[in-house]
Amino acid sequence: MKSDSTQTDDEANHINERYIISIKFCSKVQSTYFLKLKTTYS
Image 1 (cartoon, rainbow, N blue to C red):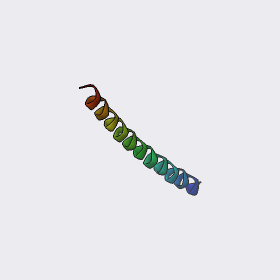
Image 2 (cartoon, helix red, strand yellow):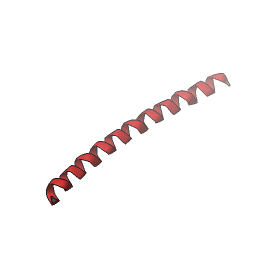
Image 3 (spheres, rainbow, N blue to C red):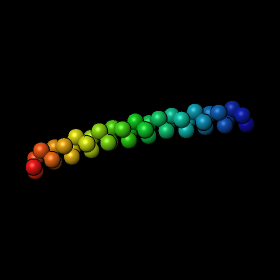
Image 4 (cartoon, rainbow, N blue to C red):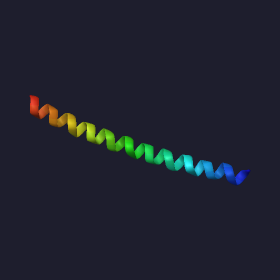
């Protein structure tokens, strides 16, 4: 029982890590995209 819970905790941490990384990547892409729009239309 205890090993199961620790395994799921590790899994959740791993998923959370990838989630944070993807959010950072998305925001980076978004900001560069908006910068391009700004320079194109201003």
